[in-house]
Amino acid sequence: MLAQHFLDQMRAELGRKTLKLDDDAITALQESYWAGNVRQLKITMDKVGYVTDESAELITRRDVVMWLPKSTNIPPRVVPAESGGMALSSDLFTLPLKEATARHRDAFQHIYCKKLIEDDRNVAQAAAHAGYTLPGFEKLLVRVGLSVPSSDP
Image (cartoon, rainbow, N blue to C red):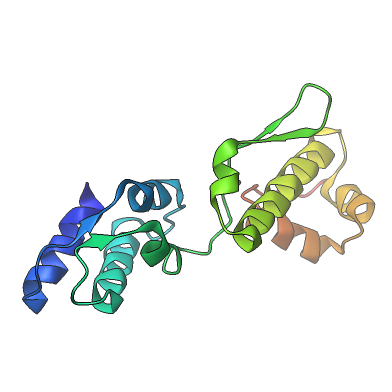
């Protein structure tokens, strides 16, 4: 895994003993959205390695989560339920409450905004329906990972 490779590089530069990622830490890294891609992952692993106690040999989820990207542009695995509601994936319950709440909120906003746009509304009508100004609604669309539809005639 690339994260372990970056951790090994950092560890070798500092002359520290081996640091390994446990399975939960790997899962936390895999579930994160990496907007900055490889560079962002390397920076994150460097931070984890620098702040981990020198006597530690194993990096846990707890060591990793504080350094994970805070971006919520990609909604978590929240699936629209057949009844029109939302079903939550079980991995959402492995997160701290604040993070799970933020992801759930963003996922709901993603689904809500997408539905408004799909229901034959122009962007201005969708913004008004959602209780937003047009510029505010367009920022919301971008934040929740939706593209801003082209202007209506």
